[in-house]
Length: 629
Image (cartoon, rainbow, N blue to C red; front, side, top):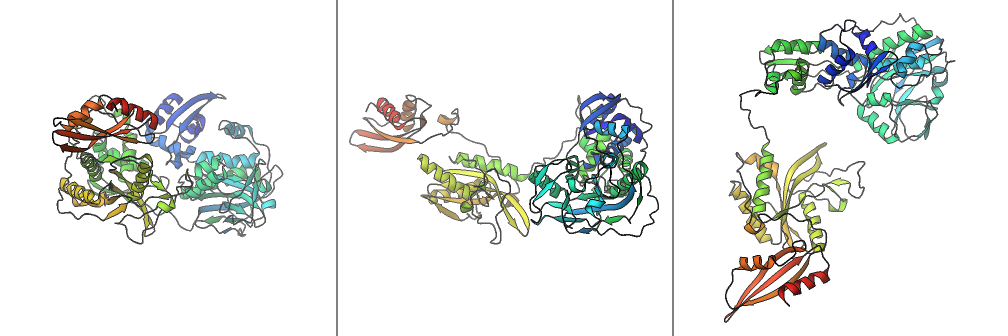
């Protein structure tokens, strides 16, 4: 977003800040300046506008912000329409009612379009917009000024019968005003006259109804659409324009009449003409105001400094908020429709602090002696405790992708039968289109991977989110899945798991057979609600593994056995430590004692060695050398 200093001065006549100071102050209130340059004896400031601030994609929104910051009066460029004599109604139809928020349109005849005046051509050039003719350029001027896109059709080509509709396959291609051909998609929001597509709504106009110098009649429209629809069509067609960039945001439909009237006045002034129809105004569902419960003391608590309630109130009023003070600590605040981003109490707190000034918050002293409560969700502590308990039980933790194949889809045992899977769109891998509804589906895949790599003594767990659809809404929750080679051992460990958490009598969830082992799944969020306090669990690592770094498994694990015979009984740990030292740690995965057998005065120890990151041939060679076979 670019703004020209002289244009801002027109909206704020009493502005006395130099361009550099203005740029610095815009950054401090959250509109980050990423460039400032001199162009044609004027200063152009480039801003990075936050994603949810559609109101600031026009001069009007930026000027309103500066008026609040500097306590200046904002000069509105609005002008009333001349009296409309015509009783003709435009035969416009809106078929895509669920995608259109508001449309205003009018027909102007007897136009005398002409080459663009120098002031307007210069203004557009400073915004990197190519000049076409006066009428078209005025529509772009209004878009930059108010932040609301609009369009003018040559009515002799388009006719008056405009229809806002979605493409049902009747129209295959579309040629833009500059001659670019676009292949239309079914479902694209378009403006047509039943014979041809005139415009891709909210994105770009067409060649077959574009305004030229000889245009004498025009339908001028200004519309706001559902942001998701504009974003979807723009991405699907791979077309991004100044209009689509703005209409992808939440714009204010209540600002449309003001901007539309200004546009019509400018057209009548610079292109003459007569208003030849009644104004068409489609606005079936006016915005319902949002009422926010707000504590005026909260900005002070968040900033750590004293911000007087009077300043809070003045700031919110300058933002055009309606305030209904119920008590000293409870206000009902209704934000203006221009600020669609103000939805929560935290939004009002942010507004107050940024206009107070982030730079006024001290950095060299404690902001408050008050000890703040721990607001970490209980589920976070439960996840940490569950991880540590299972690691202490010698289980390995795995992490897997939440996207799975259709054939691997499983529902968690604690989900209702009516729960449905969630399919993703535009997935990076079309083979994995569905989000898992059970961690067990991930455990199954991991088990198969371990089987391929011939990894012994498989016992592992995963903590992650599962996803499902129920009652027409999307749901998710944290879930724990545990796999063990033995269902008996798994049952025993899950009992100990609950005991460690302080729930010794908790019911064991159903155990499911997977290959040669078994698995179970626990709803952690449901479990967190049953715990009044999460115990602090620490990891107690075996001495031999205390300083051992984790290894990444990149190939097959090879297992080989060796028998050692001694005349005296040996401590197993001593044997393991002795032989571990003889191996290259880069290829030794694990060394265990499988069996100890005593016969007369001899003790036979059977060792099993697991090798990785090496060939079978090399493993056998190393094995023979270490054990002198």
